[in-house]
Length: 215
Image (cartoon, rainbow, N blue to C red):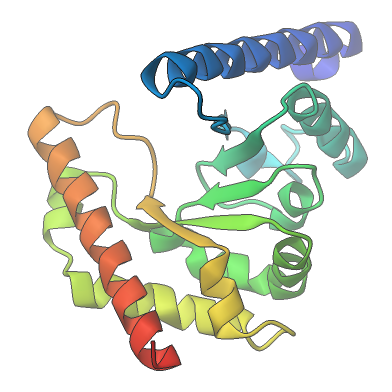
């Protein structure tokens, strides 16, 4: 219902902006206590669970309205700001916002994002980062995968982007390896396994990249 009430939407966006800013301040305080004297940056992610409905009869906001609301929430932050979309959507919308990091389920929707390769290339070209959710975020699914398979899948998708004006090396320099989604609903054992698999995939990509560059 909030989507159809402009006043309520503006209030909600303002509240989210303040919550995000409050979280950033808390992270800054924690960092200052843990690492005194160091000027550490922050990263705040906002989950976007409903853009999968964009373009349907159930989603009436226009493209520019969506971009404006996301920017309003994000522009209250001083550090890096990221957004995670839980499903497939019109990725050009998020890529046109002021976010620094786009987090997406590369395991399920990586090929769909490649349909927006030109927009992704522009996003990376202006300093953005891609958080490739290549590792399944459910324990059973993650255990069916291997480091080599996930690494190859990510490199294949990154290679498609490299055909649109960016080198593969530059794409990987602007890339992070992450689980496909949050791990809050997983058991501790599964969450630790998924985190470990994510680390191993990231390490393997770094190794292959160094070998490819001869360093």
